[in-house]
Image 1 (cartoon, rainbow, N blue to C red):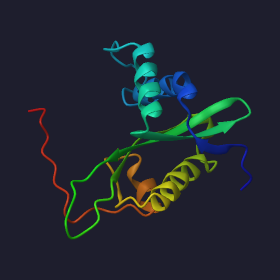
Image 2 (image 1 turned 120 degrees about the vertical axis):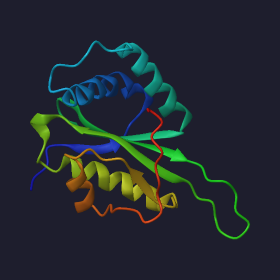
Image 3 (image 1 turned 90 degrees about the vertical axis):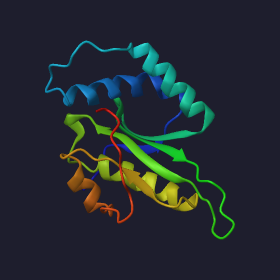
Length: 157
């Protein structure tokens, strides 16, 4: 498959476009009829810029000659020191999105491969994700599997 995109680490200067894509991503969850946003696009842009600048969040983008067409974010979750094992961080994978016009061309797989390559080289303990029903097959194809030990307590009740 020939690619017409490149994958690179996101920069704080990409925050405006990343916020736009984030809004598009969330609108897909609402079948094109989203409710009125609770926060502004500018607030999202500031949040993304701040997190990418401080290094606690990382992101990768797929870019064509027309600009950024996809992204995936990684939050580094620190672990408490342990006297018997290392305490390498865990990576939380989130906000994985490719524009519909660019899907099924390899950009999504390339984004996750770049993230996984970083995670391995940085010595992360592992990666976690809460996939949507639609994205679960892709994550499984790329090696993610159901954990034996993870529990979740939803607090929205």
